[in-house]
Image 1 (cartoon, one colour):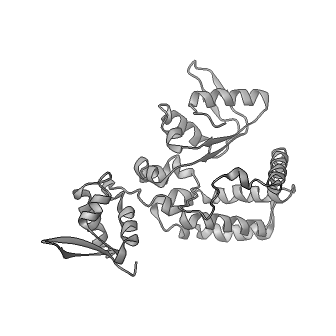
Image 2: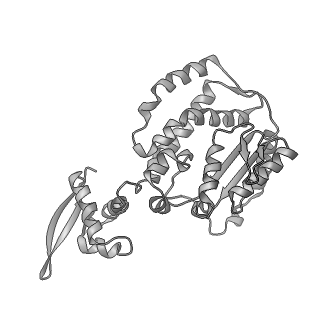
Image 3: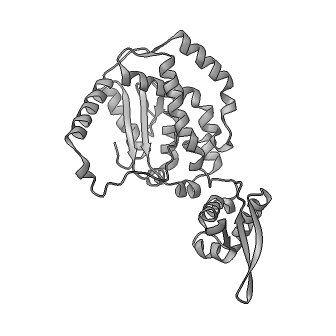
Length: 304
């Protein structure tokens, strides 16, 4: 499903799926996460989807009329798209660490080497055949049922990782992700397993592939929340750093920064950003003569 959702729609839809198919497995696609979470019914919808995170079987819910119903074998996949700018302005550190958004796996990219002015011109017969085989494989995977098993070696390696997993988190904004990574590892491992064959078996090779896939995502995950901080005035700190990094000589005047960011912040907020960066020894603050006036200059320290 890809339309705008409300908790009432999900409740009714899951009730129908339980009665007709005996399971509630859906995929939600939200091309704009802001729109998806900006619904007036947001709080109830988010609470319901959060409760679905652990894929509960037979969770009980009570309707407005007082009747109780339960859903069978709940599994919700959510693919949502957003920009770091919206996450910066529309998300708090508390929501990331412990709330609904803290249960997401964020895949961050700020550039691409692909350039397809007319994508349809690049859809060759090979691409069409590949898409057909992929669709057939996904349909087949959806029919696989049974209990997964894990090899002794994979289990031993998982135990070692599990006991050291807390050392992986280097950013407090990702505490929520890393606290749930233990479950995510097996979710991804199961996907890798069924992508290879129908044996429902997780060995050490599949576990290694899973950790590698997650490591690739984690390498840039913190960049997604680069501007999400407790102090609203510091939301644009990374934007200022980025502008300094691209500037000739790694430096900009105060006037240039204010002119570039006039629609984002004023001089008072810039002062707080600069003070934070200066105390962290990320930038140097100096001055220069321009015409008949002296201007404040901010320079990025080269070693950063």
